[in-house]
Length: 502
Image (cartoon, rainbow, N blue to C red):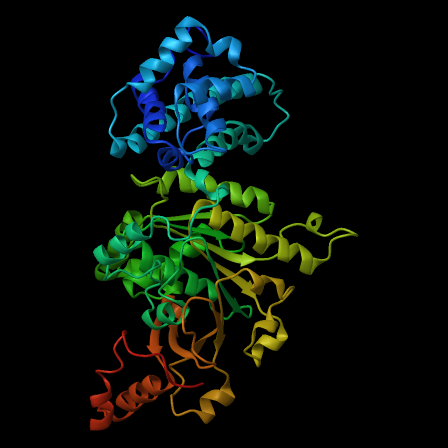
């Protein structure tokens, strides 16, 4: 028997015994066995020519029949114009050997998984040869990113073909449901998504940032959306979950100052102007905060001026390098933060493509990226002037199309002077987060999550609903709470029902 390989000097990566086990299982157990492995194997999964031919014949048989015998294999070979090959003595002996090869029905899929992974290894070998050839044609006029993308794109595409291979095949909706229920039973305490660190917001949007989804937050300029982004990132990275922030405006130094202030309790200006350097305790606090930051899996890159395709390429590279896959071939938990969606270059607009369309394409690409890689994304967008007073999904600057593909949309805004004067909450609770659209969660039914932002420390604290904010303001003003309010503490835990008003 021959082994197929484009380079005869390189040993073929294969497992002949597992190939025979899969084919024998389909012959012995029929259509059910074929269905069990059909999403894993194809003709090129097999490396022996005789095995490839047998697989093609079996696939032909199962188009009209559920059982296999020698006659049906020979008939299928004739229909495929393979009779001359399969009627050779060695080929016939090979088929008879497969018909008597001992394999248990429960082991067929495991053998299929094994030879599928070996096929991936062979495909990567071929990609590396192609990459070598393409790199040989580089003339030096290319950018570094263009050169790096040659191996990066080809290798990643080859891998994703296997990781997402079942997505192109229809299947019964109940398939693998038992495994899913077992997973839920074994992980009953976990949220369906990555927690933001703000429990009420998590609950409103359906249990945190979910895989394959884009959660969108809109805010006016200078409202504190970057502070919100950093606080979410710190909350998540402190739990050991990797975070990437794709930043269109702030420098790494800006983030350093904010993170050090947040963790040390020393004002941003005192850090950036070196005033902390006058007291040993303050120096110790800053250095301790710096150690914490260095240990966090919080990654940053400025993407100002880069095309959207290039930005997604950066995110893809980060996923492969710093997040990786678990044993089941699923991307590990992580979060990508995009701060914020806007047109990066004038080339995004031309005579045929308006600004709102370009932004619509961005959210479409970002959504597709999250689905393809099975990861969550928190993205920010700037509100238009109506966002100062209105609290609906039509206040996004540039395009209401950004709403179409996001899983949740929330508005983050400062409390105005009129609000502060009208509400019995005080001025220290100075931000509101209003979940407007929530596909998975209950939302807030037009109500708000009240928050306290300490700007000089770049800190953001989730206070709760309006009732929570009123109670806390009363405690701070009077030094104690009413008994009725104290009794309410139990129901105002993070697991309480979302309620309250604006």
